[in-house]
Amino acid sequence: MNIPRKWLVPQKREGISVWRWLLERLLIAFGIALSVLLVSVFLFKERFMFHPSPEMAITPKDLKLLHEEKWLETPDGLKMKAWRIGLPKNAGKPVILVFHGNGGNMSHFSQWEVLASLGLTVMTIDYPGYGESEGKPSEERTYQAAEALWQWAAAPGTPPETIVFYGFSLGGAVAAQLAVRHPPAALILDSTFTRLRDVPSARLPVLAPLLRLILGDAFDTQSRLALIRCPLLLIHSRDDDVIPFRLGEKLFAAYSNHRKIFVTGQGGHHDFLLNEALYLRKIQDFLSGIPAPASKKP
Image (cartoon, rainbow, N blue to C red; front, side, top):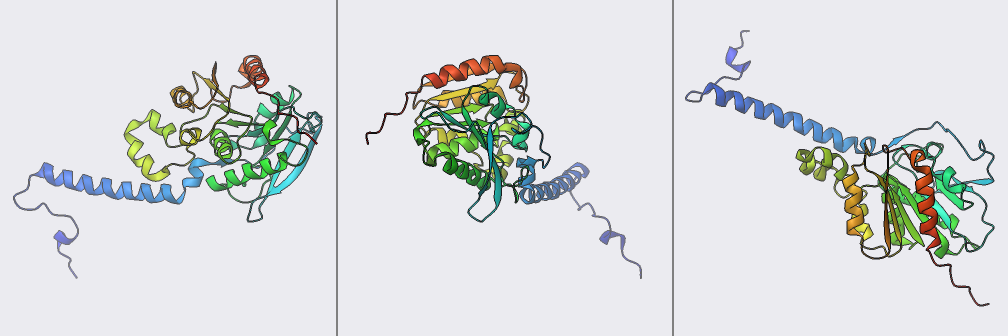
């Protein structure tokens, strides 16, 4: 059976220029490609946001630090591994909850180790899907992990008003969300963004409308800062190669509810150790400015 050629190849309509016909074909092809891209991103959005690793690097046990491991649970029963480094002995001293970023797991982040060197109690947790924690990551589950860690930290013997939140990168958004639910003694944001979609948009503004459609208000740190009233320490490297420095500046400028300090570091996104001396000094000064909790009468 012979099939007419006109059914196989789109034909140019009479009275239309070749260039217009080609432009129509290109626009159709672009529309199809964009639709496929949108569907793919919606289906694999979590893979874009989270990059967990099951491999554990340095642990408190490796460093021979006094510590406790505990399995905490999400509301739907997923088990998450958490650490408490430096068992709480000194009443009234700050307890710091550390929330890591979207890559690796808690063992890949040096912040908990460095902060523990200050003699403080440091607690951290792996979100579902990270390290040895069960399940798959999602925005809601990072918040559930933070809530579970806070519940452990605020157990009898640790006054809630002595708990400080420390969030690195995506963990800053997690810490901010927790601070809305449970006001901390202070909040430390390390290399954090305003909202997740602003990170790629800052480098490719032309994608901003598309990213707004895909990511919405996921991990919206800036909006939550408006609801937080505690001292704020913001740390950011001017040469950050992942979270643009201007997003840190924007966060800092937007906060007006309490005392705030901005510390500018050197190096890239993961160069905390490069700035260790500066950051530790500033963190110590910042924490020393937090008033001790009032003693409770028997």
